[in-house]
Image 1 (cartoon, rainbow, N blue to C red):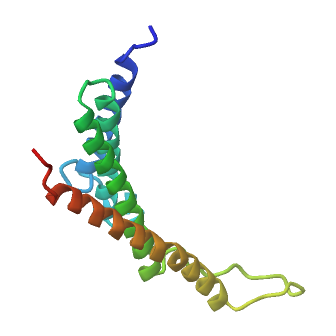
Image 2 (image 1 turned 180 degrees about the vertical axis):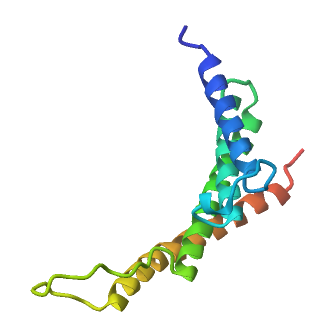
Length: 152
């Protein structure tokens, strides 16, 4: 019972299926209105790929193929880091999250509406730049490992 491989296989298959369905929605194969997405469709598609590859990796844990587990785990991590980097950069560039502040009480210390927008923008840029750098390094390592020849 300790070596039961059905759990990772079932959970991995369900997660990969969910990622595939979510991937089909931004591609308009499954018709979904634009207002249901909180981000551009291509960012949602990248996150769906990370779910798909993560589920495939979990399913591969039940299979005796260590090379496939390594490749699927790398693909899942790469898709997740890339999705996070793209989302944070998109949010920083477009100013997502900057809302007009509610009217304040007359006795409250009030900053102008530009201060809140600046703080939110700085927050997104503070995380976007390092995550972009991490994603670029991850892509460089992944592409380098694919192009490197293994000795016979």
